[in-house]
Picture 1: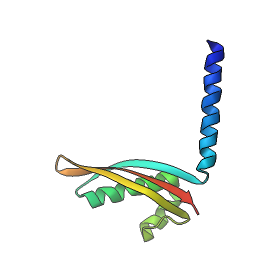
Picture 2: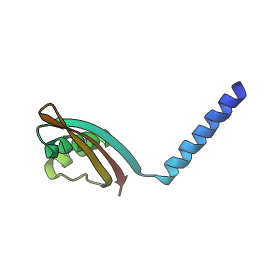
Picture 3: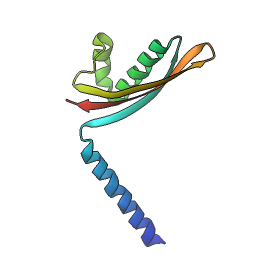
Amino acid sequence: MKKSVLMCAALAAAMSFGAGVANAGCVTKGAVATSSSADSAKWYAFETMVQSVSWGLWPGFLATGNVEGYKVVNKRYNCRPDGGMVTCHGRATFCKR
């Protein structure tokens, strides 16, 4: 039993290291935000994703709306009405340039 657990752990570690090499320099983040409109909730969700990549990116994002030094790909949102508000679940991949 111990041997099979160790083998499974080793396999999982090897697979995760391989996945990291394929996406070197990229990280996928997700966030949820609620606001009075879908556009506003999307903005807040994206702001949270930027913060989770690096707090150092946040001031520049607030000033320009851009994520300096990163290419943002696969940005997706799923928004639904939520008791007079709108809640959006967002996800995006940030790749260093």
